[in-house]
Image 1 (tube, rainbow, N blue to C red):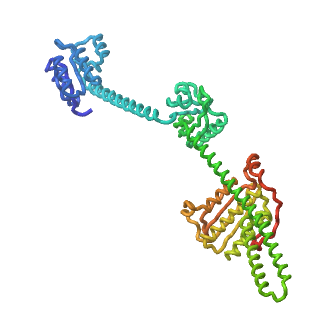
Image 2 (image 1 turned 60 degrees about the vertical axis):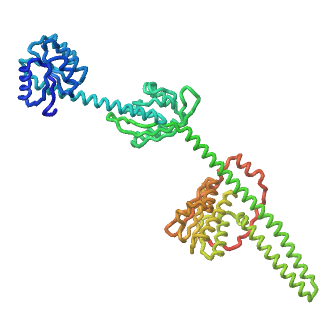
Image 3 (image 1 turned 180 degrees about the vertical axis):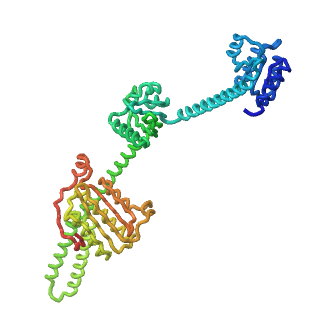
Amino acid sequence: MSAEFHILLVEDSPEDAELLRLTLFEAGLAPVIRRVDSAAGLAEALTERAWELAISDYNLPGFSCIEALRQVREHSPDMPFIVVSGRIGEEDTVALMIAGADDCVMKDQLPRLPPAVTRSLREAQMRCDTRRVQHALRESEARFKGIVANVPGTVLRLSLDAGGAWSFNYISEGCLALCGIGAEQLQRLPACFFELIEPLDSATFSQSMRASAQDFSDWNWEGRIHVSGSEEIKWVNLRASPRRLDEGGVLWDGILSNITLNKAAELELRRSREQLSRLSAHIQSAKEHERTRIAREIHDELGGTLTAIKIGLMRLGHDLAPGADKALQLLSSTEALVNSALDTARRISTDLRPGILDLGIVAAIEWQSAEFQKRMEVPCRLSCALEEIPLEDEISMALFRIFQETLTNITKHAGASRVDVLLEADAQQVVLTVCDNGRGVADAELSKPKAFGIRGMQERALNLGGEASVSRSATGTTARVSVPRVTPMTAESFFNETRNRPVEAPRRSPPAANPVRAK
């Protein structure tokens, strides 16, 4: 309360008004007093300004104290109103207090007036503060309800007490649209919510809840619920933050959101990705089968024909008469062309499908390493602790093609003077690691749109249920490929893949070059 405040005094006696002022002044109060003595004067004064306090004599000629109290309350409901009287009965005092007076002080007990004024002003301030807080609270609740009403889901406060009992301290009305159960019913019967959870997802719900309660970590759960009263199933996501209760329990504040559409889109994207992978795998398989067929045709048909031509030319040379130098010269040049055609046929056949693959992946990697070393004059050292790693043809071919692509990238971009190859296998997977000491691959090169070689390696491995990665190392670039030893193929897809595949007898041929191998 400020040292100076304003009092509206309803008093017909100027002497009594001065006595009242002196009493307040002697108590350390310095009010500015406006005296009125009629209903009209009171009504006019009430409109002049805001008054901190009203004091009224009980006995007013032609104007009752009750009427003055009514006027004050109609204009300013919170203004303190104190009655000062020379004589008043108990019943009248009670009637005034019921009507809204804050206190009643007898004129022969005026020393009671300053404490009554101070107390009334303090209580009025408290009522004002309380009303302000209540108004702010209502505004806050209105804003909260407005926000909650527009949240695409259900806002909730869920508690777990020390005894393991669940309860919803709060749940928004969005639960009716999401779960098919109203907020009032869920707060009354919280078990209704847990009965909606799909049985297959109940375990993950309980596990995630226990983990959050034990570690006080954020609770994040995805699962399915049955909408009450219908056959509909929805995917929901629960995100909540925990805090410890004084009684030993846990309280979560969070949001339960409907993610059915997102989940459907995610599943559709996954199905599309799987279909694309199967298509890519089918294309790769068809390509390899066609390469094998063409290689066989070149090797068996074209190679056999060229060999027969060469034999015929040799016989023709033996049958030429002595002195036919021009014919011998022509025969020799034709034989050279046949030999060149045979070399070309063998090279194309080997590029399409190296026969060394029939001897296994270890022999094929050894042979390709030796070929790279011979062609590029760059040491290519293979380390493998196993003599052989039995693999399905599809996996063996894919791993070999990935290795070829890796060596091609090293040839084009690395500028390396050494390549180290490590081939490992266990019961489940085979791992190929190729390291070079070149300039190292940059992150921008890995992510550029036309990095088809690296993407092709990754796609081949992914189609087999494995993975491939290329990264910069301290000494250059490292490519790592891991694939399972058995293709992840269903019986139906295996049948579709193999029913039209021609049956081939395995052909074993020695490597074209001596491998460089470290044991």
